[in-house]
Image (cartoon, rainbow, N blue to C red; front, side, top):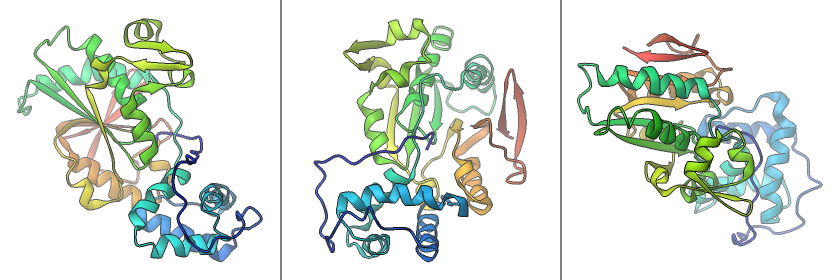
Length: 303
């Protein structure tokens, strides 16, 4: 959920049979139905739509309703709740309600802190068990630009100094569509617009309007779908030296934030670091981390 730009559904996806009628475009989201949708979404993924986001939710749900040709928001709600393949439909629902605008090297100060200060510190820590590998989690990876930026920075700034050191970057997102884009390694001009020219020349090949990422960098990152609100799934995410989770907490209420941050804390190795978005804070959410200051940015350290 790193973030925004609504996703559309491809026409080759089969329409699922359920009370077909008009495309629902004249339908409005009532206050009661908005509350019902808000509860379902919150229960499933922890995302909370404030009262002033009613129109936003309405416009996003409308995309899926129009595709399925379901008459009303109420019927689509029933469809999601009682669909025998509910997990499949939830994937499509997440695509329309999540936001996925990002680009390469979006947060340069965090990358600088990672390669100049944090990784050397972690490698020199007596608590670091595996000195030959650094594990980093991009916990809201969207279409992969953050994870791949980390890989490129590592390759340029860390690998020459520590030739025996390997990097494992895991990218996760609740949106299946952007995970597929990340795996493809093919990006549009918008995604690479902030990429330094050196990296563009070395790691990208242009083919018309597409930019293909070098396979060497692609192989340094793996991607999978993950719901940060799913406590069981989160228990499998362990042993990370650094976690990047930017622009996610802003979509949660306090209860969801506390739960997710607690799980992120458990996912980190001791003396590991968590980075969140510039507009986000752990104040009032967790006292488990120690605030760490770096040039032009801050992080949170697990001690």
